[in-house]
Image 1 (tube, helix red, strand yellow):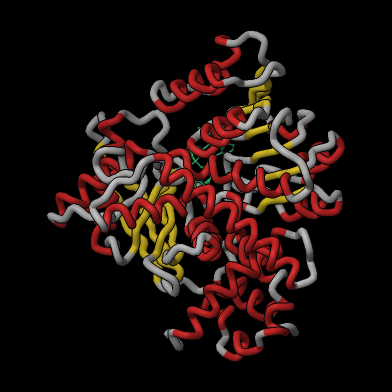
Image 2: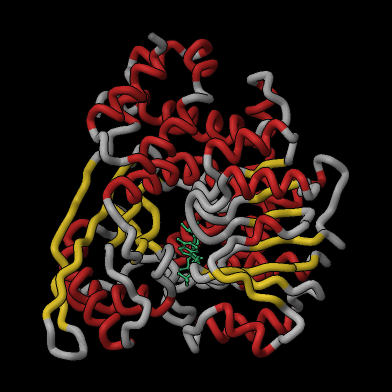
Length: 446
Ligand code: NDP
């Protein structure tokens, strides 16, 4: 049996109930066989078995009191996956679907993504099955304070630096940071995605979506194409989707869809800057549903319970959640002539869907490369905090652009070196893996 298959079988055997983690691991491992042929020293040091086992997993009880005075209990967790390159770094997700398998898949992806940024950050991820939807600000605050009352003892500016993810935005980061500071008596860059004016970096909220579009721009440029005039289907309407839409519009692309977990809206005229500002207010302040868009803009259509991949588009930008493009969606995208996909969400394309897109030669920017802009700017926020400095938005944005352009080049170069020219999935996996494997070799068996 091959070393790779053997390592994967051991992962499944050890935690059989974690399908998302298995999927994320296999999507990487299946592309790494040629690396072990070239670098037998990685096999000798059993890098794969060490890489797929988290350095530390912390789970804890999160008790809190709701507005009716009832005691609620959620489960909190943090997976400190790999610190070969730097302090653990990765977001916190608050969503009822959160379980250990999902957090491990996200943490595993994060290791290679963070390596690709070329910044000194290791991989981690955390979260809770708490659902912030429908909760009052005070309930969210009490939950965040209770969550941090346990997590604070495991994290620190040079140890583990969480950020946001689904259900965790500026409001939640603020409440958690306040509690960390109160418990430790320290003001330090222990969380990223903080508000501007109290340690947050300019461009951090925008970074994942902007970076996703910079990566898309580079992919298209490699084929002599550009974003201008292209019809773009975006899923999601949260942090990543909003800023992805903003950057697409600024490059002259036409955003025709956005969605939430209820369904998607299609606007044939395009979602322009002012319509996007309305969506951002709806989602970030009024905390409403995307279907309300068609009341404000009656030319648009709302499709309940559906995803946007059936609409004819040139470019698809999945920016909501995992496995949101399945076989049917992929077939529709190919049939309708979609030329490129840049993943904003983590693992949004199922393996079956990817096989269809890859066969049809759709340009494909995998999440661990295309959505690395968020964590890249988070690490720039860490640098600013460590130096008690604040950079201009132009400076941060231009560093983000350089990093994303560099990630595209690393992926393209690694793919070419391993005789898979143009395959950015293979390129991202190999480039990220080699960086982590080299650091692990240097540091011995730890
Ligand atoms: P938000 O919570 O801000 O937004 C999530 C969006 O996705 C919402 O529109 C939400 O709809 C929708 N969504 C969530 N779950 C589902 C589901 N099961 N089916 C359909 N739609 C769903 O999160 P982010 O924008 O921060 O994150 C989106 C994705 O990007 C995630 O995969 C995340 O891991 C990834 N990511 C985020 C980064 C960041 O910097 N924030 C960095 C890198 C990756 P609703 O409101 O109805 O739930």
